[in-house]
Image 1 (tube, one colour):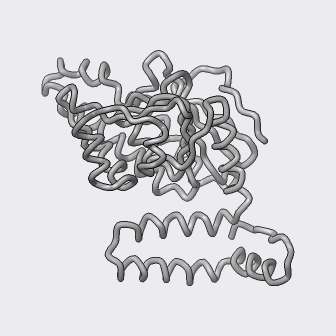
Image 2 (cartoon, rainbow, N blue to C red):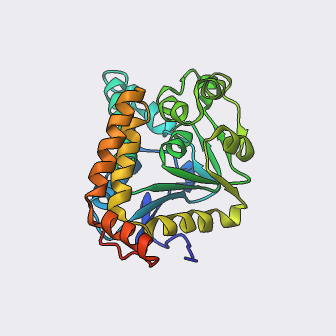
Length: 271
């Protein structure tokens, strides 16, 4: 089992690699790991690099401190009320950067696992919902509380509704109440719940299992999954069938099928 500890260096986003796994840790504990423009830009830069890396096969996202992420940096947003346009351009730019980051997770060929040790609210819950997999502490709580402050969580709703369905999503969005880890698991917002001390170990174990598979097949499969999941049935099957046919042409598919028939371990080439 890979042992993880938060790197002892500065920066709003920390990175540490464990073989083929890159761990990205939000490092703004004093601001509850809120998604400032600087943090969003750091995430986008890392995903640009990691998505093109042949050495990295999976990504884990974590938060330093008791809070995974409190969502957007409200203090930073409010500071721009003094702008000539009342902050409108900054608001648009910030939410566009956030949307670009969330889409970068989905579009990345690398599976992304959220390791949620603490509270995730607003865009923090959006980030959890956007990741391909999520492990939560049994102490974790989730919330989209914008309704309490006159700022409906419209962008978090995009990812959350695609995870837990409309009725559950609207319950979170309209009531703004905290839900615990068990409800998050039942809703489908997270995959697994573990003691806080084991969350990172479970997330890394999942990432290690993913990393033992063909990176080429997983990249192709992830892209196909998100392409078909919200499409009409016929279009979804067309997309999936095309993807499987292309997958069959990969070296790793020939190797994997051959290894299965010959009862041996496959030797992946990631191509």
